[in-house]
Every structure is written in C-alpha cells, then in structure tokens.
Length: 435
Image (cartoon, rainbow, N blue to C red):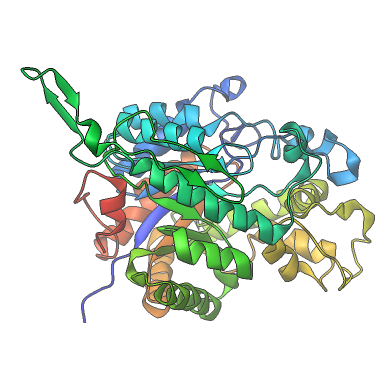
C-alpha cells in the first residue's frame, strides 16, 4: 500500500512580535525583534524543508482582560506587542522561493475592498504565494480600537464573514483572466469589456467594484480558517482551503473533526479533498530521547513558574478574567463567552491550575523525542486520521528550534516518503492541491 503524503505548515503563534528574548538561545538581536531577521531565518528553513505555508497570527490591541490591566501581557510580551503581519509578507517572500505566506487579516477590522486590494497586491508581488487567514475578531479591546464598544454576537460575526468573503472573492475575480492585453501597437493595456463592477448590496456591505488591479496569479487566493464552534465549522466548510485545528488532542478526535469538515463540505457541493485540515503540533526534538524529555520537563517548569502568563492568555481568548477563580476549584459550568467558544467548552469543569499545566505541556498528543521517533508518530497518526497534515507551532521559538524542525525532523519525514522533497508548483494554491 503506497504511503499517504501529508502537508506541513507553521503557525506563527503570537504573530509578528518578540520571540526568543527569554530563550536559552536568544540570539544577539533581541532588542531588534521588530526587524524581520528571525522570521526570514524561519521562512528560509521552511523553504528548504518544502513546507506549504506559514500563517502569521495577529491581533490589534494591547489586551487588558486579565485583572483589568495590560500589565501582565506587557510583562511577558504575551499577545502584545505585535507589528502588522502584512508588512512582513514581502520580506519573507523576497528571501524565499516557494513557501506560502498567509497573513491574518480580520473581517472585523478591514473593509472588504481594502482587504481584497491588499491581498491582491501581495499575490502579485509574491508571484502567487500568498493566502488569507480569515478571522472574525473576538476581543472587545480590539473592537474599541475601531470605533465599537464590543464585537457583534459570536454567530453574527460569521454571518458578516460569509458576506465579507463573498465580496472579496467577487473583487478578486472582477478582472477576467485575459483582461490584460498589453498590446502596444493598439495602445490597449486592458480590455474594458473583461473588467466588471460587482455591484454588491448586502446586509452588511455595499461595494461597487471592480478592484483597481488585475486578477492576481492565483485568482481566488487560498483562504485559511480556524472555526471550532458549530457556526465556525459551517463557515470553514464553505470557504476554507486549509483549516487550523487542535483536533481535540487524540487521534480519534482528529479523525472525527476531519470527517465532520468533509461531510459538511460535501453537503455544500464542495470536493472535500480540496480542504486541507492541518493539526497543531508542538514537537520537541533532540538527539536522544532523554535529552528531548529533559527539554520538555524544563519547558513545563518554566511555564508553571509563570501561571499568570497562561491565565492571561486564556482571559484574552475568552474575554473572561481568570484571575477571579480559585486555582484549585473547577470552573463553573454556566460560563459563557462571546469569544473563543470551542476553547471555553474544553475548559469548563476543570481547575485553572490543571489548565495551566495543560498549557505548559502543550496538552494533547506528545510529540517529544528524537527526529526518528517523532516522525514515526506523525506518520502513524496521519495514516490513522486519513490526512491532511500538521501545523507546527512554538510561541517563543529561537533559531535552534527552527533548525531542529526544518533540518532535523523534516528530513526524517522526507526519508520516510511522507512529506515532499521538492515543490511541484510555483503557487501556494497548487501546492496545497498537489496531494
């Protein structure tokens, strides 16, 4: 039976912000974290290892949910500061050849025309290597930076996102593929009969169009999404080309999540094979099992020594101040959130201390060991799940971690024949659809 190949991507957790400043290997440029150097090193490592894409996570506020203050967030550089991910994209593209680059751009913070124009421009300048991580925004602090008191109710945000994605897609396709003629003799740059206003008038948006630039190399740019709630799953099944998910922390739940997406996609008339569901993984690899386990232990010790860092992150995601709860009492069953509902659902009934320990252990499947051991685990898991791949994350990585994954773990996956050794295509969309 032939081996099933799977995709690899990288989730740049905590966005375009400080990474290795507290690491054992911080590098010499920690005061220059705002420069793209570390991220260029990562992108080049991913290019060598033939990853599909990097997602640049983002949020656009300094959180204050935990204890009603931004102090804890700034103390740890947790969720703030962050620079604009769209600015990082050209730097990464110029330093690499093929790897895809997917900035996070929120439908709660951009008008659709502006976002469509920005992504179209990036698609041109990267020669077809950009995607769009479509998020709806959940923290009211960000809403208050854009003239609103709070975000819309959870499910309505996805109603907005549905219409938003429809408008953006129409704008990307407003120029027909052969609209640009470039006939110098006829003095004809573009054929106006092949460029179309979209005249969209919906519940939330009114956009004339067309976009004022030709169709990008990919046309409809690949859309990434991370919906975990029932309404989020519906949106992702309709629009996403690739989906970020934790998958529930077990092989069985990963398989069930993927099947749910595929079933919903079929019901919407989509080919489920066109949606790549990638599961978050935090591998810790070293030359021996003992060394890897010690690294894992030290990560846990460091995380549990800074409980407030973990609790503040949970507070930001849900809009619930977790400083108000006893660390050793189960969370109330009646907690509700207008933020990340799927995250809160997993936490109800557990104690905050146990959740902090879970954060410290990157709770779920334990990808710790030698490159051979971890690669074997990944291969077996994907064979059981059925596809489609993994999304590596490490919120505060350093250059050593980049090498360990890109030049240690991935070559072992390639040796096993389960990840690509060379890119078959130039565009991100085509590489996603390769297998």
